[in-house]
Structure formats: structure tokens, C-alpha cells
Length: 603
Image (cartoon, rainbow, N blue to C red; front, side):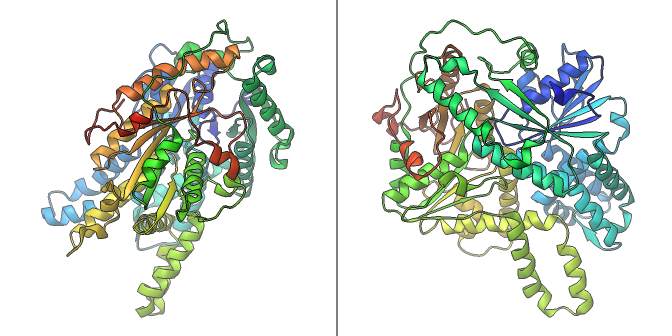
């Protein structure tokens, strides 16, 4: 694999969710360690899966991987980082201030901006060669899906520039006059990211048009930020021979080759590796070692997998249940790459075709609903919560309101404060709150960012709720969090694939939602091979491995479980999206009426 040839110290694996970044990062760490190098494997994804891949608990500290020589691991946990950050600010004054003042400071530091900055500090410390990581030959980063990784990689330059121009005052980082350490650390991070001798970006994609188009946009944004040293990896290619006696496999292989033939211009000049699809999930050290091995993985003899267990419903019947209230917010959540954007568009199209006015939007910075829809239909409007647009809107509003009564010096200070990168977090939250409010009078279908970042957005909603509760007099429904907690107003769909990691992440997400007082309306198991009856031996191997995960979801007593078969044609365009709402094997109309206690056990 050429992407590991003459590997520099920092390796970043990035790309759209679900393309195999975590597997490739983990396998690369093992490969480098086998060459005698000492490696630190780091996840910057708030919903990290490294621990699940290796079957160990890692968490927010550097730990050795059991049974793996010369590889340590770290999962940057934004919540743990934020708590440590708050403690560093509050502990020195804890005994000197009254409890009411301390509580007020804690509330001010409970927002999403503080959480982002705390995690960002942990990230830049690794790039700045801090003492704990100097002994490692390589630091391998498994990053969050594309949109948030772009923001993370731009933040060192953004904060460095902000600190260079602001000498006094305060920000989310604390008093600016005392931030020489951060200024030095952020500049060191900028230099490391821009140096091809120290940093390489591995852009990972599946051979799918939407994934490759997104990666081309990522490549362009990286290049504009001075991060031009990249390598392309096409992961999970289905071997052509699998389609010889299987129409589904043949359609998949043909679709993949067509996508590669139309590779976006921005990717064509990059060095590129192709990695074939494996017949098993890449969990555990031995499975990971096969990923980068030149030898083909063994495939068990072909045998038809049994249909999915009874108890699932179709996407059509799930849409019927959603439509029953005639309005509300439909919130699709889950790990990156499980198909939230496709399913959000499919549900919105089917509600619109039933005559309901529907607004389809997304909070994912990397989502492009226009590409998925590839057309229009009656009763459907489409938008996007664009961080850049929302930030400018928020700045203009603050200057027009708070800035209207300020003198020239005060307005200049306000403008400086609004140039802080934290302004984006506030602006995106406010757009999210407006989206929730719009669902009072019609259907709003919201395709969210991958799990970890959506939870941070919900944390911001909770912090706003706690703050506003202190001043609220009257209707509690004015709070966005109250609307999310109302099952008549909000229906949360947890989207997963029938694979161990997405199912486990969705289960953890369900637990987090329960703690916030939100009960999911349904689980949706997307792109199921078991529901598609493949004839290819390799696909049958993968279909059979799905059954235990589908059973696990059903055993978790989710209120509803819908299953969507793997589509032979990429589900883009109004017609194909509408066609997703068809009967699936194993569906039962009666199971639409299964109910569960408000806080059922997670799978």
C-alpha cells in the first residue's frame, strides 16, 4: 500500500462517514508497528470506535493496546476534555468565591463552544510535540467525518490568527492576555499540518459517486487551507468475479467501476490505492491485519442466508406511522455512513407525495441534499444549515441589535469578539433551534451530522434550556429541548447498518437520548444484504453476519424496527428515493403496533 510508503510522523485518515477510516487507521497503526515503529493511534471523532474495533476500553487517556506491541491509543473525549478545562479554570478560585458565583461560572462554561475548544486544545498539543507524545515515531489520526474534520484542521489557523490580532479582552479560551502558551501551540500545529515532511492526509472513499464528489470538495478545501499533501484510498471494492452469477453483485460492481471511471478532476492527480471488500467485519487484530495484506481473504462457500428475523417493519409502514400526527420534527441520527441523508430524503419525498407540506434540511456540514434528491417534487422544500451562512447572519444580527447602542470603540470590540471561531457554534445552534420551532406547524425532516457532533449540538440545547429556565416565566414549550422531548412533536429515528460498530454506537446514542429525556421513535436498519438475498459467496458471507446484529436490535425492545434492503442502484433521485418505501422480507404489519417502556434497555 503506497499510502504508507515513507510515512511521515502524522497520518490523518479522513473522508465521508462509513468509508472505513477507522479500519484503515487501525490497520495502518498495526502495519507500522510491525515495521518496528512506535505508534500512537488517536481518534478525534466524538463518537470514537477504536475501542470497539480492538475489543477494549480506551477512553480519554493514552493506554497500550493489549496484545499489540508498540501501539498505544487515545480517544479524545470532548466531554472529558471540557470537564478538565472547567476544572483548570474553577479549581484555583473554588475556595475564594461563593457557591452562587461558582455555579454561574460553571453554567457559562457548559456550552458547546467550551467543549469544542477543550477537545481542540488536546488535538493541537499532539501536533505541537508536547512531552507525552515525543517518544512516538508516528501519530495516526482517525478523524470525524469530513465536514467536522475540515473545521478541526482549519481551527489552528483560525485561532492563531484571532490571538495574533487580539491582545486584550476574553474569549472562550479565557483571558486573552495570558494565552501565550496557546498562541505558541496553535502556531506549531499550523506549521506541522502544512509540512508534507511531517503530515500526510489519506483521503478515504468508497467507489460511490456521492462519496467521491464529497472527497473532491474536501480535497479542494484542504488545498485552499494550504494542506495539499494527500493520498487517495478507494476502500471496499467488490471483486468483479462476484457478479458472474449474481445480478445484485454485478450491479454493485458495475456501479463502482462507473464511479471510478468518472473520478472527479480534483482527485485524478493523487496517488491512489484500491482495497478489496472483505467477506467479514473488520473487528479484532487478526481481521485488521488482513485489510492491508496482499493475500486475498478466505471466503466461505456460498449458501443462502435465511431472511431477517420477523418483527421488522417496512420503510413505507414506518412513514405511515410518522404521517399519523400530520406534523412534527423527524430527526435522523446515527453514525456517519449509515445512510441518514438518503433515508431523510426518502421519508421527506414520501410524505410530500402523500400531500403533506415538508421541509427537508440538514445540520451536517458535509451533506449535500441536492445531490441525493437530483430533482424536485411537489410540497417539498429543501435547505441546509450552512455554518458559514449562519455565522454571517448571526454576526449581522448581533451588530444590528447589541451593537446599535455602542460607541465606535465598543462596536469595534464587539466586532473583534464576533470574529472568534466560537461564533460559528453559537450561530449553528440558533439555526438548529429555529428548525425545531418550525416543526410546530408542519413536517420538518432533519438529516443530522454524525453522532458525536449531533450530541454536542444537543448538549448546547440542554445548556440553553438550563440557562433560559432560570429566567423563564410562562410556557415551558418555548424551550427547544422541551420540543425535542415531546414525542408528539419530535420523532427520532436511529439509523444503523447491521454491523457491530454502528449498532453499538446507536445503542450508546439511545442511552444518551434517554438521559436527555428523549425516547427514540424507531430504529432503521439500512442497506441490509440479508434483506436482499444475494447469490455472491462474498455477499452471502456478509449477509449471514448481519443476522446476529438484526436480532440484537430486536432484542433491545426498540419501539419499532424498520429494515431497508440494499439497493442494486444507488438511491439518488426522486424516483429511486420513493422506491425505497417498498415491502422488505420479514416485514410484519402487526409489528407496527409493538410498544416499549419509555426507557427500554439498549441493544
